[in-house]
Length: 334
Ligand SMILES: NC(=O)c1ccc[n+]([C@@H]2O[C@H](COP(=O)([O-])OP(=O)(O)OC[C@H]3O[C@@H](n4cnc5c(N)ncnc54)[C@H](O)[C@@H]3O)[C@@H](O)[C@H]2O)c1
Ligand SMILES: [Zn+2]
Image (cartoon, rainbow, N blue to C red; front, side):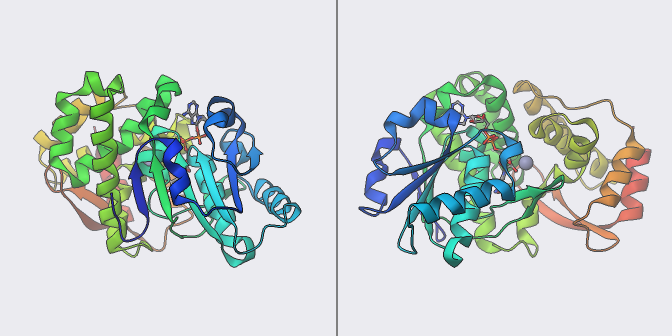
């Protein structure tokens, strides 16, 4: 698949060599991924980090810079991130900042990383509880998605990845939405043909949006569908990101439905699809806490929020809404 920003390849991991420079490649990966797939890695230096969100810190970044210095890596080196979203976020950030930026590419190994995290050029780390607060936007040279790697993923990781796929379908591809509805059983079993189509189409929705607005002035905000209420739920309840966003998408649709902005049959279809993938559509949580958490969101610029609203399945528009009105609507929601 060609995109103006990065070359996106759907194919086996062992075909990566032709996209790499002939020498001076350093792989950044985590210990889990190396254990499963280390033998398939191309010939290169390896920097290994621990697995997990807790490792997404400046301390990890500093330790990688030090290892790059020990390897005498200069501006001609190439960083290859092989792993889930944690690895691609860290590897992208390291490569974007080491010596003011060296080239890099990704082999995303989780479903979420293939359909979402490795795509679009955002990278970064967490600081003092603020997620992804330090980072850059810089596009990798290539992203190679090998769907065969997904077979070793725990079931929950697959389910959580489907949340962002459903999001992409809902905001940008009605045909993908129908395909997800019709093929949920085979999709969940990771049938190779279906999963390749899903990864391809999902990436296409994201890259189409990012291409129009790389730095998130407006259009890219469409990718936040379900994430305003979803992030608040994630903060309050500490459920996994995917589950929180699944609930967030349904809640945002119901909210806009109550304002007459979304058709209730579209909300119904979305709710059904989320259920088909074994994901929650509601959660016990105080509405006032959600409203309060959205208000406190540190990234908020003013008293308004720009929210993506479904324009039917497969399309979406952005609506600028006053925070007070949003809070009132959340509190009124049944
Ligand atoms: N940059 C972006 O645009 C963007 C978008 C969405 C999410 N993210 C980030 O992505 C991160 C989450 O990514 P994730 O869900 O991939 O989590 P992750 O990277 O923590 O991976 C989840 C677990 O699966 C393991 N794993 C990876 N590949 C495997 C495989 N093929 N088989 C078996 N185990 C494997 C990992 O070692 C890890 O333990 C978050 O930090 C989030 O902020 C970034
Ligand atoms: Zn998300």
